[in-house]
Image (cartoon, rainbow, N blue to C red; front, side, top):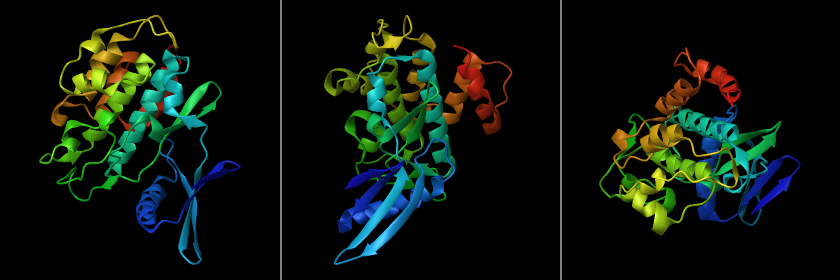
Length: 267
């Protein structure tokens, strides 16, 4: 059960199996206290009744990215959303966490001063890595439409770039301004048929004349490579974006952050 009060969301967990998963998610959320791009845990509480109850308090957000995909938004807002989500993946990588279930429903936003502030949420399926950058096994998780090839395989390792693939599919829908059909559009993409990305129709709910070739050719196609080793990681993708829209920046996390506001002023 999820309740909202003031600016907090209260998640009430009573089922024992669900509670185990929620406690795992709680431990991950505790790592995100100061994050700008990952959903923040505010506090937790237990109640020992006939069956134990767990209360998880997180920030209240205005909606899901699904809402923005169909909403009339500008190129500036789209790139801001993309950059924030890539920062979020970079933060997860630094903490050795694979989200596993990146999709529009698990990306939340607040709207303030003409900008969308983005938070990655729902870490119930996330995997905490230890010494290695890959997990050797993983039961089939995630959402088929957004899931990378290696997660669906029984004999491939899962790494941070699995999340990059999922986010690439999300970016396609964000840029084109609509949710794609799995059978007719996403499945061919997964099989290497990228013809649909060659189309550059004018999108009715997007405030720009045409879809940006750079975003498709240099960003999206580098995210949805079938072989995960051929994908760019979050840091490389951020660098590509800043190189396109800014000059003379240094490739450090601090400089990336400083460049974000400058980048947004280019449109």
